[in-house]
Image 1: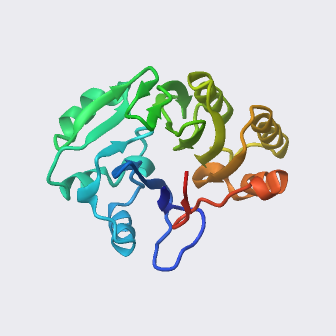
Image 2: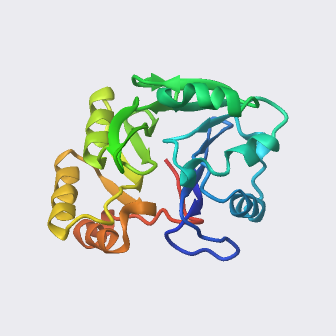
Length: 238
């Protein structure tokens, strides 16, 4: 089950929304934390409201090294009495090994199996605000289907989805969710992306975070009953 515990999209009673993204993921009696939002105090308060104990986290997955996705990392590690596996993009390895000594650092470059139900897409390299950036996304797999969770999709959500499908050709893409980084894109561009996701066989779509309200509206209209809200406080069972 995926629970969105930090997001700037949506509202939920007792939870504060803020710019960024974090998701609490449970499967096989394990907990994987995907990203950690931007504000550690907000993340902490939301976790407390939802009665989620950081001490139960087994693995942490940081999609990319931007403040709104790793801002709560130090707080989370400080509340754990064991070293979780911390999956990061390879370009940040030295910095994270030095700064986050409370975690077992696992740098990711190529597609990587985390356990029986979780994979990294492998890191993509792109340019953001004239700087090199690496980002990887999380794939959750079951017998015949998978769910793709993206942090910000700086390399492009269609490119990320395409790689996930290539890495797991025996799985159907049940859901693509997370930040799609489309807030500044034209309507025509967003419509084209929406259509391409359908062509690739994506069954359900749930954009949030940096996708932008107008772009989210385009997906909602285009996908109808196959549009899903996975915003702050929302849950999805896979």
